[in-house]
Image 1 (tube, rainbow, N blue to C red):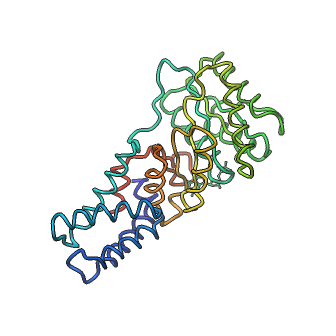
Image 2 (tube, rainbow, N blue to C red):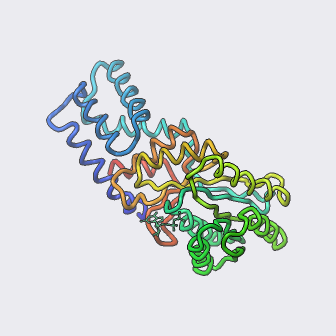
Image 3 (cartoon, rainbow, N blue to C red):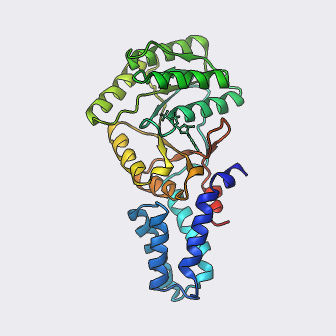
Length: 303
Ligand code: GDP
């Protein structure tokens, strides 16, 4: 229910647009396909992924010789689902293996995308599952970032490791994993600075954090979660490109889908970067983070 509500804007807009794309037409022809292409692009699915979907539908029309516009919803749904399945966009949240304790999740992304909020929401979910969670405030460049994370740690009721502003992010990460290990914590969530002005700096900073954590836990981080703001369309694609070249992103969280009518960005990003979308943010509250489920997600667009 939260999901449907969170994606309400996207689904209503998508549904209306599809309706207009086929208005007065009974057969899927070139004009309908052109309209459909526009619908997908204007929903931020992205050009490449849109063309891929249109091509699949064209192939089906060519094969079956004829397609009714009334079938288009169902066929589009199938093709989008196939794309998400092809790219392993997961139907599950992070699984915390018993034999990797603590499980270290490093969270990356540009400032303002909802990184801190996502960490807070994840901490809440893990805690609800009975797991012992520790936060590491490695975004030491903005005082506000540490303050925000402290607020989340109090709200959720999980400890946080921090140092003074301007201290070495890698040193905070080191302290955090060490403390997590000493306390027998299950999950560590490490916040990082989201400065993208220089790719080499970003790359160096993230690899230093990794290297230093590995002195305590050799295979850490177990996940690198990239947070993207779903309401920023092409910017989100651009950020995904930058971060995936700077580090080994293993999972994506797409936030603020409640505030946009362009939820199609999730489909395009998952397709183009071949990295599973694990979570979607559909609001500002602690409970407003959903494990990404491709069936529910696609369904909500056709309701
Ligand atoms: P950070 O700079 O990346 O750490 O971003 P923050 O976590 O501080 O979030 C920036 C703003 O976005 C805050 O006002 C959050 O409440 C808001 N925000 C984060 N995630 C979501 C979401 O899924 N939906 C909505 N509507 N707002 C969100």
